[in-house]
Amino acid sequence: MCTMESTKSFAFYTLGCKLNFAESSYLGKTLLQNGFRKAEKGETPSICVINTCTVTDTADKKCRQTIHKIRKQYPDTYLIVTGCYAQLSAESIALMEGVDKVLGANDKFEIPQHLLTGNHQLQVSDTKKITPFYPSCSAEDRTRHFLKVQDGCDYFCTYCAIPYARGRSRNGAIADLVKQAQEVAQNGGKEIILTGVNIGDFGKSTGETCLQLLQALDQVEGIERFRISSIEPNLLTDEIIDFVASSKRFAPHFHIPLQAGSNAVLTLMHRRYDTSLFAHKIQLIKQKMPHAFIGVDVIVGMRGETDELFEQSYQFIASLPISELHVFSYSERAGTAALRIPYKVSPAIKKERSHRLLTLSNAKKQAFYQSQLGTQRSVLWESTKKNGYMSGFTENYVKVKQPYQADKINTLTSLTLTPEQLDYEI
Image (cartoon, rainbow, N blue to C red; front, side):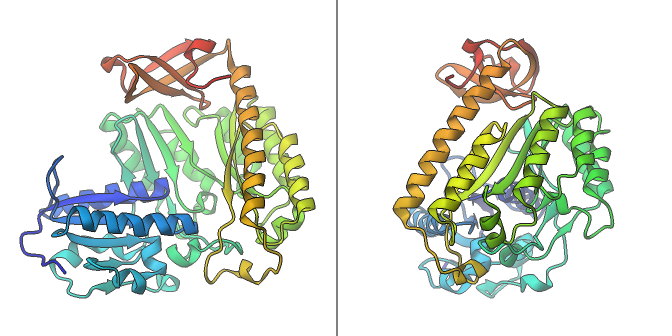
């Protein structure tokens, strides 16, 4: 174990979702405000914080690998492990060689206090009792920012452990979130992506609604674009779709978790919609915004997903005018209700189903990009340089490229899209 004498510089290692990255950015700011400093490049940090994810078995494995890697790289560094994996597997992490402190998913927001006064190795609060909402906004990239508007989930889908890791649904107040967005604009940020565990459930803590949040943010001067990172189909109301179609700043870009295109599997998952509702939402988006990009999450190999049910799912997804699939293999999580479902899908079949859906996804993305050729779009250029090129995204999430020009970073360019400009083969 390392001591806390002279622990002044820090480094973060963040795994998982954009919400985690937003929270790590916020935690870095709180450490700076409490007299710590960010470790410089090449410097051995005196504190390392690993912010973990637990959405799949693979995520858990990656967390363990990262802990071993950081301990080997910095044997004398004070090592803190926090986040969702730390919440659910605190005791086993505490037994890992070189781990100095384990903080639960919500306990991480008190990292400065734990560093300055805390003596206990383990601090993991009961997620059933978690009520505070901690605001977070990442500022690692001056083009795009990730604003946390909501945390936790009340849904308890049978395959998911996140409600056990992050607790019940809660959110910030609209006035406070608008103030954060205004600060991003004052600092030169052009695009904000709204993040959370279940964004559409916004309002549980404050008596407000998701639509009211979007309407308030749409008035923030200086922000060119807002995007909604992900929203449940049953919470994506027709009113929200109508609003995005007519808004000044919300991009025609949706990310909607389907998880399965079979009603039988959706029932096994305890999802709160059926394929008919999902298809209605997609059709309404395309009716109001024919140019909208629609990304869809799908899980393959859920317990109970027979060959026939997967084929139903595949055919349903193939029928939808969507733009891209994000395909995940079902991963068994301890304590979830899905473990009681008897039929298990083999790893080989999961792999084959994933391949089919990824092939379908590629075809749909190519078709969407093809449909955008010749249209005039606004591109926000990012700072990454690759093979002499820089890239950016249109408002409807088409990735384009041009020769690198440093003065173009964080600026908007109006383009008529050509095949040569696309940063994707069609």
